[in-house]
Length: 548
Image (cartoon, rainbow, N blue to C red; front, side, top):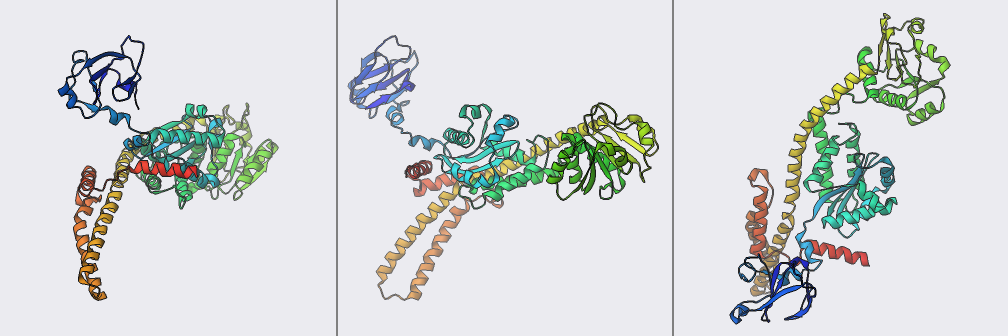
């Protein structure tokens, strides 16, 4: 028994062994449904009119057909425009996969879409990444997977056999490992498919999607995904190729646009500005004092270390914070001094960074005048608000003061420069997306190449065996080898042309569309199409394994 669903509203159903046509109008006022009509077809709709067909009309009907009608032609049935209702109705859940194409997607959350309270729960430790890939690829509709987990994002890249089922399974998996309800994840997650997913990863790798535009750490994190994924089942050809290409894009963008140059935070700008003013633009021989070990103070220390500063004095009200920083950077000599030693420490420093929450000046003009003279111009870089250093200290002959306003101009100029470079980077990314998509699409011809060679080899082996049987059993091994090589040579020469037309080779000048068309042509000519779709076969295989 077949059930006709609501998709056939406003249609005419013609029955092959019946003298009836059923008008299924959704605006019918009839209140009852027709349980059985003709050859046991159940109609879960409200019939409006039933009229008799002539015998010659019935004789031309080989199948039940469903025809859309307008008000003007509701009484006519057109053979030429008929669509087999049974063909639509018989489509099973598995067969519907044949209409879907295996594709790349990204499902994730980032600082753009989710607060840190959600992101930290979804974060995956480095040691657990291989297991995460394995678990994802064990899901029914996920073929390949990779996980990019950082402090600012948790993104899962996958090759899915079904788009919407893949998203559902990944979301449920994320909920399972984190304890975050699916509803909460859906509220903050984003999903991108095919070209958009590729473009997103390329932008991430290039630093265009980072909190600080153009920052370089994310490229290292993308490289780490490839390192961790090597040899892990599920980190296969498409996903591996995607991430390796993303690394190439990240490098190319930074090389061609120099987007990472120029400080875009106050703390990094402070360190960069001081470096421009000190001898030889190097912190190697400069005595550095940092006043304050809070959030801004720690950032200044980090940037100093990144610029090559190996020793410094830190003045703070308590030693606890300084000890924690010293523990984090064990290769750097960080000396703690209490606030009572502030002036004595400043008198032997060449560069003084101030970053405290003090509401009064820590350095006045009178105090600085009493300090011992520095061998070069002493720099005060004041990034505190309220200010910690009197600006009039710059009136002194060997002293120069820079405050946060001076730095903001540098930061804003650098930000504008990076935005301009980001536009240049987008052109590079668009070019690289096209190149990657072409490579990915060319993979579609690989199964055809394999099937064509297998098909031809099977014929060659069969015909050679028949030939040897006809020649009798006394043929020498030398002659057998010669016949074998002859058959292989003929096979390879015959396959050379078709194989060349299935391969993406820029020197041949063939477009991707031409190659795909060649693939479909060869499939038709040699009957290489499988009776069951590759997607359906993969899904069934996965489901069988999960039930064991």
